Length: 495
Image (cartoon, rainbow, N blue to C red; front, side, top):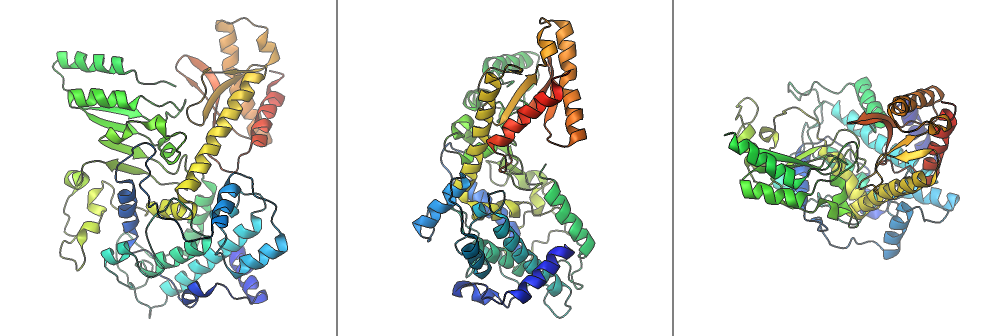
């Protein structure tokens, strides 16, 4: 953090250049504050999704963003790795001057994205430094109050609205400033609350470091499900709900949601869908059909910090019935939630959840969604599945590898064994299975010791230890997949 701040200060002294074009000049003198009404992001996000997971129908605003069409094409092609080589000197000047024609797709891990990333993060550090200084200024206000409906409707230069197309980084920086500006300065010496004990600078550095470093087949058979429901009913038990899965942890499988929904409606059961891993496919017009029927669920869990790459942690629990969470969890604790506030308290989300004190995790998703647009998330997800398909084809073509399942991957999970030459001579049977069970752990040990690559392994059911490859990192390329397979062979050929 010290080096970043120092670099920022030197950069500002050496480069006395106009920082932004006219539309954002009004922000240059503002010292910013921290989130008050950012809980509204959750309301807008829920309104955008509106618990309507209908396949291929994204609920974000369809209005065209007022940017030249060539900038749109530039953004999309760069996500796909097809953008042309940038002219470094020219771009350096543009970057320092403004971010009006630069997008999230120009940042790392995009090739040659180092300069843009460096300048963008320095801008963010400057915003945070201004906020921190303002926080400790006893003469500053604890809160620049605006009613929740004003924030929801949008103020000048600030909107919670999400779009299909990305917004430039210039707007993302404005959003960061406004988020702080319209929020409570919880580190202010005159802010008194048991959940906010001030702002510790070292603790803040630790939070940044941990966030940066932690980027952290088995389908349900509908006929079997119905048979089990009838069995327990004959035993005078009352079945309550069915939990289906959209993207299993190990194999990346999707339960037949429409068929399961039919059964749940027939017997009056609550249908829950665990889409923590696979829910991100709803962003992809190519792959969203795999979640057909999710719109019929009573509740859904979804973890954008998985497939969509949002930093840990960011999870959502969504229900169809409006007011249900409030009815189930509301404690009406007078010492926490007062109904006689001067603003509309329906925007207060705290009494809807089991957990009271927590991060505003939805802000990360909202900011990324504004920067990438729905189409940007779609490209990232499609790329991950393309890499899974590439690995599947490579494994089929290599002699010393065997797939756990022959079918093509439904998600980004690909499970396989490496069969060393010595083991290939042993016929299938208990002895071979026992030896094969030891192969993946030994190769993983050597991987860790050499530090060249890392991939998970595990047993599952009657399957001995196998490698489980999962794609979700936008920096991964086909060359990295090739390297992984070659490294596994190098480390395991003598086993």
